[in-house]
Image 1 (tube, rainbow over the protein chains, first blue to last red):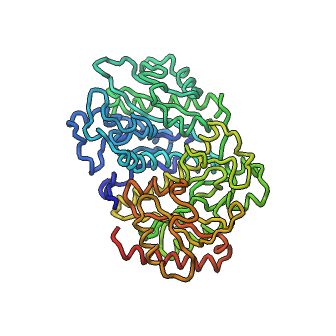
Image 2 (cartoon, chains in turn orange, yellow):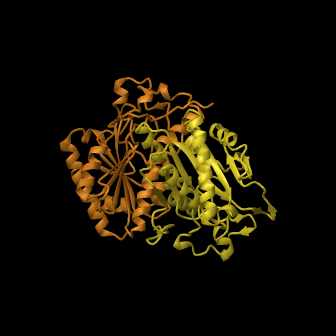
Image 3 (cartoon, each protein chain N blue to C red):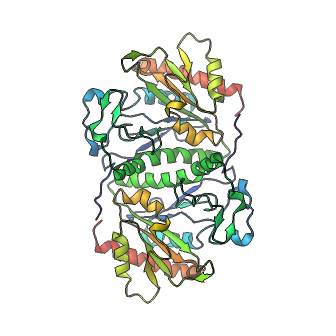
Length: 258
Length: 258
């Protein structure tokens, strides 16, 4: 007899959120690390409160910026409603980073020695609906003759393993750098932010999974944006960054073909 | 520069179909091999017409029976709108059976020597939205406090490699045989059909992928039903089988806990 062991329970709700579903922009915004919410069944995973509110649980500010960009662009936004601590939706199920038991300086007790069954439950409950919904959105748009430009929005911690990061906005890409190249060219002279290619990390660190799944093989324009989270702690900073990125995307998409 | 190479184009439409979306039954019906439709971009895959209409392309009659069962039970039905010849949604991406170049006695020219990029495109275009949608449906129901009983509906060819198959309905299961056991017990005395456990094949043949992904680890009641396709060529046969299976499911679900 199998024991029913649910990742998500009644109070948790749908793992996938779609906002501005009727958005008419070619841009599809995705935010994998939008929330630090833990499903009810997992308690606090044995973590202290400061860890649960830190970048190991989510990308602080990323969802707020994504929402502002979605509004600016009239773009669809898909985000994950639960913490990357349970399943990091920007990692494939076979990656050790999908369900980490250590993240930066934190040990994650509730993720130690996970059984294959538990890994499989988390994959099905969180990863599959999320990536599946993105795939379906792209398929439906293609069916309607609409292009998709895939833009994932992340934030990173200003201090990592005790070292300060100078870069403020990272424009990341995998093998297809078309859109990233244009965004970097279009922002080369800005004095507003320190912008860098593939900083503070890049494809070799395994962070371009969503781009790889949906955009690379299909040839869709794509980019991953990383924002240093101290810039987007407050609404003012979020608005300035969102408006800057909106303009950068608009200009970059206007200058090239699809 | 990447070349846009789409699996599905404008005329193809959404790969996933959800019917009776508001259905109130605990049963969730899934039909992975519902259609022999090929996406426009693939022509006929180099196959003759008889192959394209045969069981290697789809499970003839399975969608019709599923629809009748969905109506009888007031159940949600999720089915794939494209042929298993492009991607067999009851197989994981790493399985050689996901995109076969040989099926039974047919060579499939359009599937020979597929590149990794093409396999990845097909996986994202067809498998991911399909299995993702099932995962999301189950997550949403759980969030609403509703149980899910996963029932996949298939048909099989009466003659395979030249040998006649005597079984008429197969009740298949993986490690969790709770529902299958009850259905087999409840139908033990029927004179209507020759019914067998794990016939004409079983979990060891890799046919329980959908059950494995969504039901096994989560502990959901589940079963895979295989119907010999000569019984469901016409509407009358489809109705008789659908009514029989509906009764069997109802009785089996009434006799046990969830």
